[in-house]
Amino acid sequence: MSIEQARFNMIEQQIRPWNVLDAGILELLGSVRREDFVPAAYRGLAFMDTEIPLPCGQNMLSPKMEARILQELALRKDEWVLEIGAGSGFMAALLGHRAAAVQTLEIHEELVTMARANLQRAGMSNVTVEQADGAHYSTKSAEFDVIVLSGSVAQIPQDLLQRLKPGGRLAAIVGDEPVMRAQIVTRATATDFRTRDLFDTVATRLEHFPEPSRFQF
Image 1 (cartoon, rainbow, N blue to C red):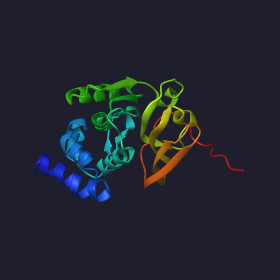
Image 2 (image 1 turned 120 degrees about the vertical axis):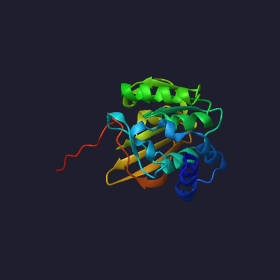
Image 3 (image 1 turned 30 degrees about the vertical axis):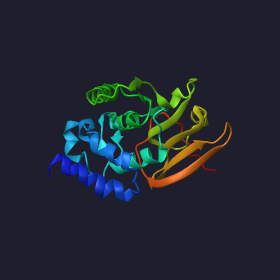
Image 4 (image 1 turned 60 degrees about the vertical axis):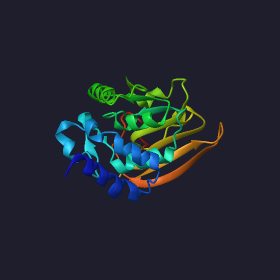
């Protein structure tokens, strides 16, 4: 099977059946070379319905999850995006095609190097990769139209939600194994946050985000 046939099958057999029907996003997934963001050892899995291992114990989300989150965020070309968990840079590349600019944070130096190289090769001049601990980045003063957590958290920190502009959206995978839930949180007003559940899943934890106490009495 050719790469282009595999890409077509990914879109038609995995992504479209997951209610990803936005023509612009489907076209984008057909043009951004996902295989170039996959480690060489796993390139044969680039279009499979599975998470793909990355260095430092991290993973790329499955294609249908990336596509569905991207669709539900409904980005506009004038919006500024913060991503926490750059991984290989693929989600940042997708976000960069839909938004004005993307700042993506990655705690692991090896992944920072990988993501920068992949994004440069893909010509993504509006995406910057910063080596930083996203769990503590929320104390900074910058505000964003969209925030994407490209991994799971036990709960969304309130101070991260405060970095959303009014009308801003945050995408995260929230909860504990065996079932987590992908959610979109929208900041309706300064004090009103509205949560919309997308689908149940499981994803690798983002590091250093707080975990709830497990003590029982």
